[in-house]
Length: 566
Image 1: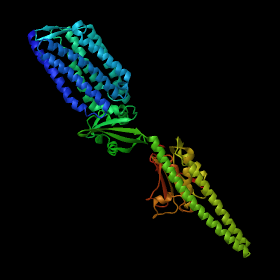
Image 2 (image 1 turned 90 degrees about the horizontal axis):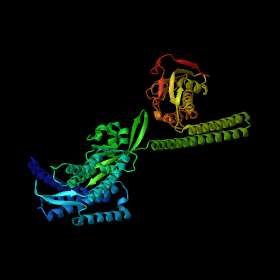
Image 3 (image 1 turned 120 degrees about the vertical axis):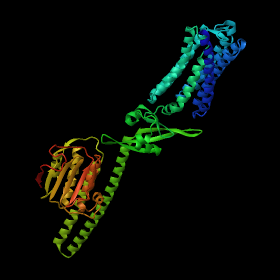
Image 4 (image 1 turned 45 degrees about the vertical axis):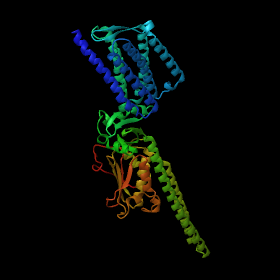
């Protein structure tokens, strides 16, 4: 039984070392293609030393018993120690630290390495590191008995390796990525220790160290995991945004926690096309730097999508998409753009009204002068009164313009407002003459109370100036409408109603509907004129959050309250 196990184990040992040497050699080509120079140096060093250690141990197995076996075993120990340096160099470079560049650390590492190598080279004289006894069974080999210095050096080596893993774990936690691949690598580095313990506890297994095999597996694993995930995590260092790693075919390879929280469709989506999960996000990724708009509970949120490609000698192998929440910035930008447009329109309207007023005033003053010369005092007085009235009307318009500019800032806070009460307040603030108010407005609307009242008052003012005898207000599920039975404008572009200074229905009311749209937009609502409405003008405000009372669920039925004009 012992001979069967021993004969088979010899070939398993040989196969394991061959696989380790070949694996490191094959992976070396991929390691040399890593973009970051310092990370590349660390990985290449780790692979070269691991492969060299495995080759030395393979040579030790195949060499005849004697000085050559001893020399190859000793060479393997010396080369194997350098794997620790390659590993620490890689971890420091990969995580963006500067330990590998620190001259003090480098000098200390060299000094410790030289000291340990000196102990190993002089081992034949003191045997403190290990003892070797030639054995003929179960196959020719040296029976190695590790000494105290060996275990001290092994403890030091694994302590240093654990420092490297601490740096990687810290990087993984910062990046909020899945750490299971790193845990698998921890298991790979633990293999040599497990092999050593089994060797010590079992008399059936020769005293052959499999440490180079374990380290070779670890080195190859590091490189392949680096190719799949490590690069995206390295690039994300210090980035507090959603990150999505895609392969060359835009399939999801990995997503950090924030990305999965922001886009739940990414949970468990590894291997699936991004376009099938999130078409709008995929379109923004294709634009390389696109703006993505998404609705979250009715509110629009904006994300800036930036991508970085991973390029190797054979071309692109994937990309990292960073999705940054720029909602506040984009809202401010849009608000500034809207305010600039509004101010430009206000300036144009004020300039227009001022020129008209000056022309009217100058004309009436000239007429008054001529009438005085002819002795018609009464006519001159009327002309001067007209000029004065025109100037006062201009003053009121300027005040209205100033009111629009003052209220045209985006609403910061809203509250549930009784829509019926707001309608009553607005109606009472406008000189409505004999016009009648018909109200289907029982419910609440999320708004700024003062600006809502101003909006409704402007809508009523327009209706009155448009000769409406009846103005109907209805609260709807997504807003409300104000309809007047005044003059119709079937051939007019609906957008023309909202131009400042327009003469719809007259110059004095030209600011009413522009004011309505401005006050709607500051709430995040839209305001339009219904082009299909017959029998007057119907203003529709949409995108508002309302609660219509149960007796009027669609805002179009139920009892209507009529209020006579005051």
